[in-house]
Length: 343
Image: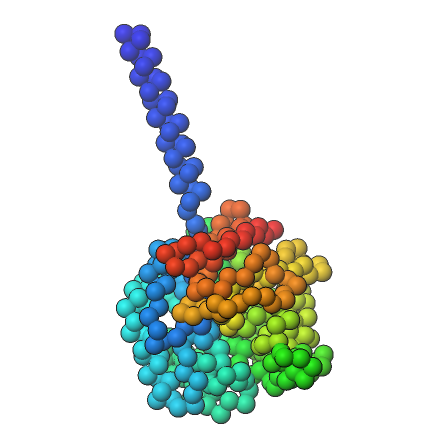
């Protein structure tokens, strides 16, 4: 009888230990919140990544710009191109049960590299908002530009997503005359990416944020500035202004997301008086990528460049203040990963 009781005792003990171990393993695999995002999506090409994105069970999908390639001032064409995307089976499956946030870039805004001068930007804004099913009474229908924000609250913490418009107010670029690059930086202090009204809005959004993480979405790269294409680096004073704002605001866990480049990469820098590194996670593109990529300078690059179709994943852990950043591609393959713990 004693032996039987001993066997029962040790069996129960082993069962409790096993359950505890399983529980710990499961906890490690769970995420408190998951964001998927991507950019550069040709609506007439079958997007094979939708089903892979769904495998990651995101709580939110973010468009990073060039959501379609319309390159037009013809609003009828723009509407048809959006409709082509909106009716894609994979996209419908992804967005049926989760919210969608979005910025735009040049190819879904107007013409290539266009900014403040685009003659149909007001009309294009309404078509863009129709695509997102934004209510006709929304303030976003009345304001100039498509910038907006939203708080996502969970039982463990909150995430604020801030969407920037880097097209509507962006002033002229300076064409490069010294080398084969397309653009060169403006004279320091000349021009703007966001415009005065949007800058004030962004200031308020960051300074008043109580969120545990603040995700700032820009269609063009913020940190990488040496490639000679579109980048915040063409307005170096705007980059400095953004860094100072992030420091002054005391906003927690600020992370930058960007697209546009047809490559994916992590850029990372330290900012004076900022208690965490500033990271710009570029994810591009969803249907096509710069497969011929060989080399390009970026002094802020962490790890390598991914030059195949991919999407971005952000996994949030409120307990450890950690974001796991992933680039994933065909068959949901993990292409690159970066971790950041915030104070």
